[in-house]
Image (tube, rainbow, N blue to C red; front, side):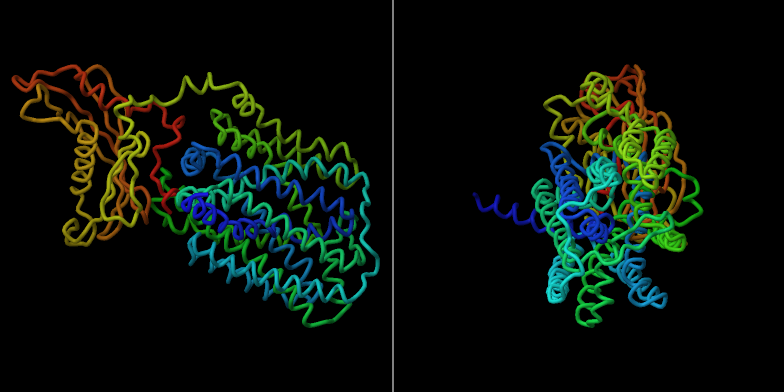
Length: 602
């Protein structure tokens, strides 16, 4: 193995701890205990293996050669923003619910809820302050401390014989019915989790291997689930507690053992392990949600953002508050965590399948309202089958949820015929270098280059650009657009010479719609693209964005072409057709690029 290959391998595997920890709680921590003591070791295997396989397949498919997760996410984020937020909400509610219902309340009573709130706020503050790279390093420390604490708890439990051994298998109709929903939910789960999209983008950006990172993360995640299964086996089944639906649960088996043994060291060790598992989910949620919402808000065209600060709209605190309320309501109703898990196998199935199909190259065919209605019907079927129990109803519930994704699935497997018809125009071989220019990171003072059909100019206003009030002078926005246009021309026609040309490019009209005002040292991005053309005129669309405020304004300009002698109007010259028009994309919704680059560079 070459040295650079070994370095890339190590860089990729360095992501495994944060990948494994970031999803441990929501669908893994206490449910691993439940399936072990309720269904035995084979029941645990039926739960844990598909869970880890979902992680592996996410990284394997998204990390395929030629697949850029940042470009894919930019193409789908607007359509699936509701799905991503709903999944974050439910996963976070699962975290808060499990922490309180299965650990703190049985151990310490209602007074411990203040401690749970403190943990949530501290972990959220960590996610707010740290970048994804910093969280990756922090989670390595978390992993070492957490595993050490879990091993201390395991040794303490091993010294006390459990009340009854965990069987190899103890299956019932409910277990058999849950197998297909668990398989579907675990295989699709990572695709709707914005935490893992953020990690995939970061791994790809730094030159690592998404496949290697997620293979390592999946193995580590499986090992952590086994660790919790072992804790459950050592603690024994305890006394199953029935929730409001009358179904017994085993999630609190380890907590019951702690209450029975009354060993402060053992209790503290398990508390540390659970706190680390919860904190690594919460800080990941906060960091990823803010990253995602900031990029979506920056590109939003909603007029409401002219009145509501973009930072307020993009704050994950609203999701955190809603998740805590959802968890509190579930606890108050004495419902089991199954009711917070079922959306991943029913309600979200259709939308997530549509997202997966688009990520793999299918044309967009997502109908959010249709998927939501079919998903709600799927959830009702699931609940009916779960309470009855009726294994057949449980098994068909995720299949019903998948009906909403049938158009996307057909598009994916029908081949590339339809997609090829609407694909953006490809560049001639000589122009390929222009389309692959890399736009530098946002900490650069000025840079320019192509981002799909858009030509992007990044700049940093100074005092020279402002007026006496302190905001950027209105005419400078026009000047920036003009500068971007000239750089766009130069990139497309570097050999254009005014001394020898037989045509001029003139501005026929120009308009700009102001949205917000920028100030000095506020990073600015100017984007310009070919919006339309006919035989004589070309229309250029432009947008001006602030890295902190979002959209500042947009407009368009019309260009005409005249001869250099008598200024007679000309048809679009052939040199312009060959140099500029290959960058024209008729329908941006079908292009996988052309967005601001906030996700790729945040």
